[in-house]
Image (cartoon, rainbow, N blue to C red; front, top):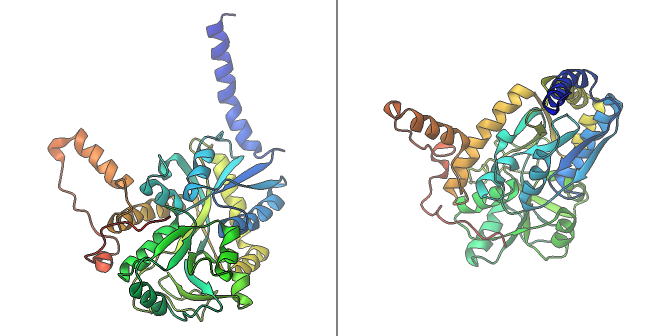
Length: 362
């Protein structure tokens, strides 16, 4: 048998084997979920809650492996390079867009296949219990009184919490210093007065909020978060900023549809379980299952919105995927090209004259 014939036979065998492997997924092999942020972070604790439920339903171990750095970009790069067989998942979030437009990630959300949205979280502004600031207005007043002296921690340059912090204080026309911080160091730094405040997601903070060690000043959501009913939104306090964060599971491009469907069904069952709902309540997050097709639409829509927002606040180094596709279409058919007007994220909300330069994240 010639080498050419041998290679052809092997290729045909691989093609035939793929549906069979999809039918028996996951077999006995474990599954890993890449989490983009450190142990103890909001992303980490919520991913472990999901992994436990999936393990029970799939009959194989589902591991959580932390691959933090660059606002999530390091984890995305790793996950995108894994075999598309359903055994390598990524705990996806809005950061797939923020890291891309910030320039820390070289590819966008289309490198992955959506599997399911799992939950949503409210970005919150938090200070220590003995901070002199009791309201969002207090923080803004301090920042305006002494520009570039108030320090606000976030999850990393280009992360969703970084973008949220810049948007909040740009809207308030107040200059702060945005500081990237690891989850394990965040609470000690707040309690030890090494930083003045933090713009974070709540899972890693909820326990300290309930004991009174940390004080929430605002949520960046359209309505009050049911987990924190006594905490007013930024909108209620005069700043029209709403940047709710979603989390879900995605897989490398090319993963078989049957595998995606199996994972989606298991995630749906997990999210609907009483144990998952109770766990979410403890963490201060909200279950929000969406199937693969709907999740894909959510990601694409949010990508366009975040691109516009980041352009408005001076953090966008690229154009949105939707705009890029329109440009390519126009180049391919110039005689049909039409003028495309860039609309502003959330209409007139972000149209303030001083949205020109990005704040430092150092």
